[in-house]
Amino acid sequence: MLTFVAMLVDTLPLLVEAHPPFEWDRLGQHLPYEWIEQAVQASGSASIRRRRLPAQQVVWLVIALALYRHQSVSEVVDALGLALPAPDASFVSKSAIAQARQRTGAAPLAWLFHECARNWSVQDQAHYLFKGFSLFAMDGTTLRTADSAANREHFGSSTAAHDRVGSYPQLRAVTLTAISTHLVRDVEFGPYDVNEMISARQLVARVPQNSITVFDKGFLSAQLLCNLVSGGANRHFIIPAKSNTRWEVLSGEPGDQLVRMRVSPQARKACPELPEFWQARAVLAVDARGRQRVLLSSLCDREQFKAAEIVSCYARRWQVETSYRELKQSMLGMALTLRSQTVEGVYQEFWGALIAYNLIRLEVARAALEAGRTPADLSFIRAFHTIQYEMSWAAVTRSYGKLPALLVRLRERLKQLANKKRPGRSCARAVKSRPFRYTVRNLKRDLN
Image (cartoon, rainbow, N blue to C red; front, side, top):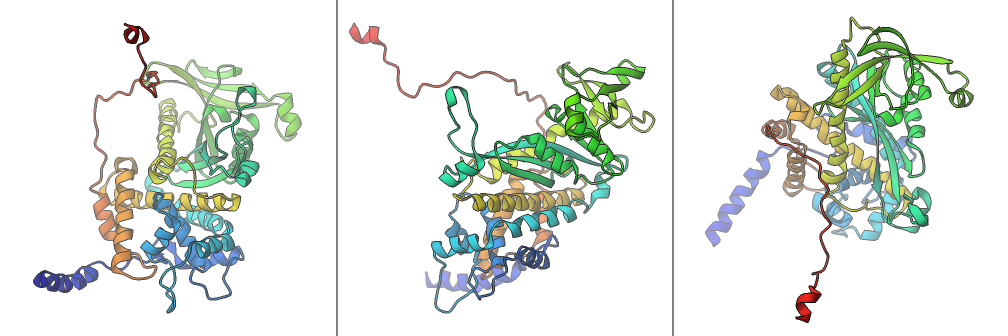
């Protein structure tokens, strides 16, 4: 036994030295410490007193909470060594952590998300352009929050017949996501009662130039699409037409036509700048099941953009649906609700989750690029678990708020986590019978 302990003592220093530090304040090249400082200063959340959890450490804590959903807040602080050292205390109390989060608020996380998303979305962008354009998808989702009085009053919830309300308050979010890398470029979220179209109009004003945005048909609106095209240089859209959409054919042949649609009087009253008519290109698309739909697009140059290319761009939109699954199921661990009981805490938590998600997605994209693959070829779940492990290992080998600076080794590992293609798999939709909660007694048998 003594011999084994001696060997272990001799070996541990070698293990520590074999893993170079990957610090929170230098999370690779992606999240410079200066951004954290600017986020805290810009939001006025800088700590004047010397605290064990100053605002900068709280920012890292909120991001880490998104990566360790099934651990308590105090466990994450202790396990990752996020509190600054103090000679008279070995741990930070739960109340001190809660107070630190309240002091910091959501503003630094919001500032940091927008700064990171703006910078990360242009990194390696040239490798993913489609004929010189960036591809984005805009879609909406909802997340349940903890059922506190404050959350229910602010966020609200779904309603059903007979004035029944949802079991949990919900926040509604609309995201602008890069189709190629699944990086969330921008987001608007808030109370459940805020219509997705309102959030979409705010996002449209911030869509980058030289881009093509693919929408779900629920966003079909002359005001939204016309503002997208006219509000910036070379901003285009692709969106399915609804079954009741009517237009006048101006030119073209069946399956690829230039059409004109009338703007409704209600829309022109709400937005007087809108023209009486707006034009689009109508392209017929047929999916794998033989179903037909018409895609409307502002890409009217038939020489530069073939009809089949427009259909292909729209088909890629469905890949972005997995980003919501990765965020809500993989990262949040199928948790029923978000952690926070307060409104400000919910906003803070969701901003942190978006930053953490983008960090993982950025690393997956970098690893895929080095391996000569596409980001969709690498497994998000396995990459997520690998990063969790590396961060935990760093906290053991280094002390107080340091994480391992091992991006090179991490990417080498990510390159080996390719998704396995399984040809011939089908996921036919079927209605399953609801299982009985209790055993059903056979009364006829019991009587006999």
